[in-house]
Amino acid sequence: MQHLAIYDLDKTITHRATYAAWLVFWARRQAPWRLLLVPLSAVAGLLYLLKLIGRARLKTINHTLLMGRADVATVAAEAAAFAALQVATNVRAGTLAQIAADRAEGRRIIIATASYRFYAGAIGAALGIDDVIGTRAVTAGSTLLPQIDGENCYAAAKRFMVEDWLAAQALTGAPLRFYSDHPSDAPMFELADEAVAANPNRVLRAMAVVRGWAVVDW
Image (cartoon, rainbow, N blue to C red; front, side, top):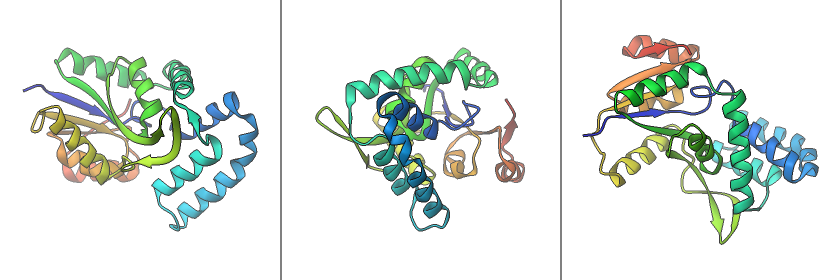
């Protein structure tokens, strides 16, 4: 059976998170007036920190404020431009080396991320990674809507979405190496045969020591 290597995106492959960067990138290029709504986005962030709304609701609000409804083809073109910028300025050299090493081992490379699939897929393509599992936005015809299609690909939901993808690809039970920087990916670490805490924060580093997971800093 084919061996797999699954990577988280933000702060695992990249130095910095991509979600806010994407929203600002889009607004600047497509609707600069939306940048005036950034303070409202900050209010939504505060509501999230106060646990009054969840991550999925926060994403929907931010998408509504800074993107609104958008033409699917325009989103794809802007996502390609954004991906090129991220690969040029925001990808860890150590991660690229590890991806190359995993490929050399014959592993199929996959990205599994809470980031929206419509731009994470473009980043994956720019890195030569065709398989990207991420949060999906609802589409209506040729229009991308702010609502999330299904689950926000985060924490336990990410594992469920990966398991669904593995089943669809007839890869359930395939040997799996997983890399992430964040403890929210504990369900994915537990699914993996090889768990690698990559650039971990303090909480994940301590968790990795207790559970015997590998630790790398790229």
